[in-house]
Amino acid sequence: EEMYDDMDVELKFKWNELFEKSKSTAGASNEDLNLLKQSHKELEVKQQNLEVKQQMLAVEQHNLAQEQKKRLSFVSNTRTRAETIQFLEESGLLSFSKKFEEDLEDASVEWWPQGAEVNFPNEEWKETERCQPFVSGMLKHFVSGKVSVKEPKKKVKQVKVKSIPDLSAFKKFTVGIKSPDLVFYDGLDKRGSSAITMIGEVKGGGSGDFSASEKGQLVDVTQRLMKQQPFRQSMIVFLTDGRRFEYFRCLRREANNFRFHHSAIFLRDVGWRILFGLLQADPAETLGYERIDVPGFV
Image (tube, rainbow, N blue to C red; front, side):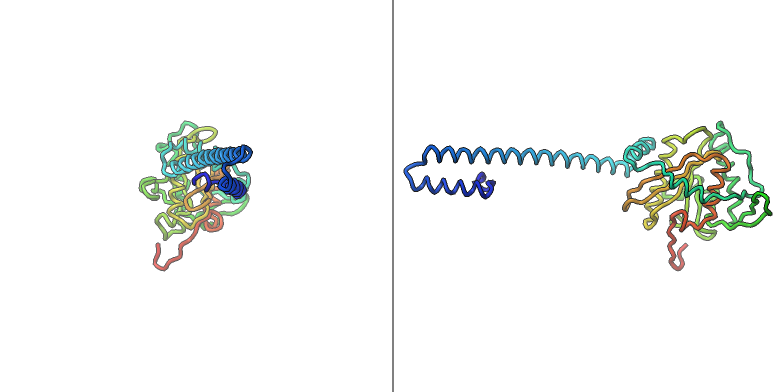
């Protein structure tokens, strides 16, 4: 009965024909028996083909499950920071973007904060001893929301800043249990993770590219912040030692899946002028920030 149920229409018809014929005669002829055996063989071949297809489907399902497991392990931070970056690069989820780099260059400004240092860190400077104080010293000019700036061959003027730096961010938890070194807020009167427009991480002096581990740290905290801002579709973040800058744009693919674009390394005043431009720009238009306008919300 099981074999009969698995037959296609043509084989069932042939089977019934032979079965009825065998009942109406003393016995089936050799030709009929051969036809019946042939029907069995055809059915066995079809069953074998079906089993092969089922095996192929099982292999495909296993591969999909393994890939999903990899993605889930990435989301749950079971990888080291360096492994996370390797995984993103191999998956095409972290890549250089010329368009992103051009957007950053367009955001750059010609002015320089009046009184800001120009003696940039060197490759031997340590993160906490020299680089963090240097970066904080540069950003202190922006904490009031306005900064006096000087452009080449022009008079000093006041520029309004829309993303305000919190110079003590590295000392406290600002993104869950994480403490980005640099946190920027939407104006002077807003605090909390939902009001963060941009973040950055300060590293020790070096040459060339930042390490995979350093990038992994930034990627991790960026994803955490994006999850805390569920309506936000993109965010610009960066790594710096005060002399080198590498910028990243995080893009939301779906609920909690992201991809990243990165720039080349910008050095000295070139990297700083991009950051100044981003601080001056409307964060909703340039940084991907989504404002939550709820009465009484801070």
